[in-house]
Image (cartoon, rainbow, N blue to C red; front, top):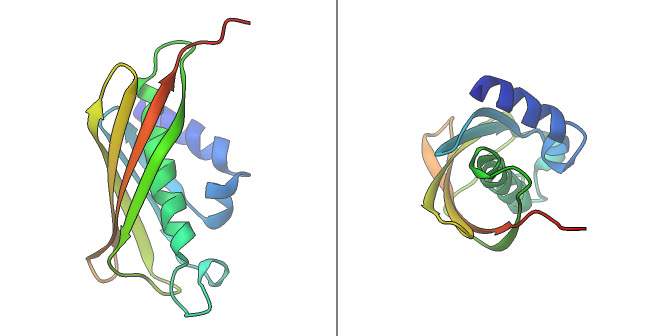
Length: 140
């Protein structure tokens, strides 16, 4: 099932922002989500380093993907808070990866942490925390 979920989620974002910047999920389960992107010219800032919003896109999408196997039928979710600490960066041609794990999986909220790493240097370049609020099924 996780491989099927990864394929479905990657297909879902192929023409959405995460797909446009090159994010690809590689693993997705209820307690661990992994993904990566190769830094291209299109996602670097004028400094020559990876644009900060692209790091946030990677981390936020990993957290969002992790909600999928945690929701009950009909539930949805929304982000209510996110925070990123930047510790480094990456340049064109380098690969950036993230691993998301839940710090809390409650009935109404989940809190996810992501460590983003430059695979070429082995250094952590960002720490990300995201709080998701679970939304009950709509009763139209």
